[in-house]
Image (cartoon, rainbow, N blue to C red):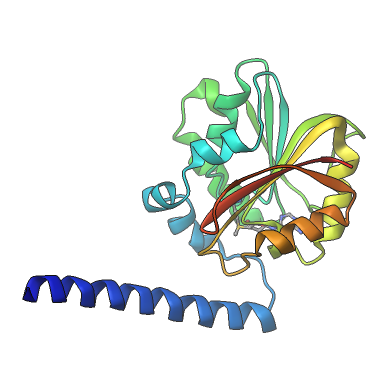
Amino acid sequence: MSSFLNTLKIIGYVILGFGAYQVILRLIRRNWHFPAPSFITIFLNSRLRAKLQDPVRVIERSGIKPGDHVLEIGCGGGFFLPYAARAVGAEGQVYGLDIAEDMIEKSINHLAKTPAHIRERVELMQRSAYELPFDDASLDVVYLVAALMEIPDPRRCLLEARRVLKPEGVLAVSEFLPDPDYPSRRVTIRTVEEAGFAVEAEEGNAWAYTIRFRKG
Ligand SMILES: C[S@@+](CC[C@H](N)C(=O)[O-])C[C@H]1O[C@@H](n2cnc3c(N)ncnc32)[C@H](O)[C@@H]1O
């Protein structure tokens, strides 16, 4: 009985700790907008993160197919890039774009741990989400994970994503509750629809979700 009570106590402390962390981080983010510091990749690229937000599932839900040309905006430390590279196969190409130089360096180090034939499918670019270095209608999939609401002007980023996507292209937005910039599905859908997209599918739950959009 006492071990059961102790377990309950520990669960209570974990929930309280997580709640306090969320409230404090969200208050900070509301008043002070800054890009995620690169040390956060210790968590973002960790096995714990993979358990909490399965990267294989995120990439599957993003609608990536063999042969696709795919862009991740706000790739951070590159956690999802090897999974996207596997999904596009030998004929596909993945681009990882981030505004922060130190994040691109983290991505380089992360990709260095993957087999050569996987990392060779990935090209990294230190660029702004507001000026994507792609021709109009040239990409099959653009995806963002825990990045859209960190970008100060999400609409400007989404209009750029719309420009570079092919007419049948997919925009996939994945969000993850522990991210201090986490938006509800409702906010994500409203923001993306206002930039000229229409919802194609919603997957996951409030903890981790992916919404796929088509050009409206
Ligand atoms: C929370 S991290 C997410 C990284 C990665 N998608 C993941 O889930 O592991 C958000 C990333 O968005 C990038 N970012 C913020 N504003 C940006 C902008 N205007 N253009 C491109 N990237 C931006 C940040 O540098 C940061 O690496």
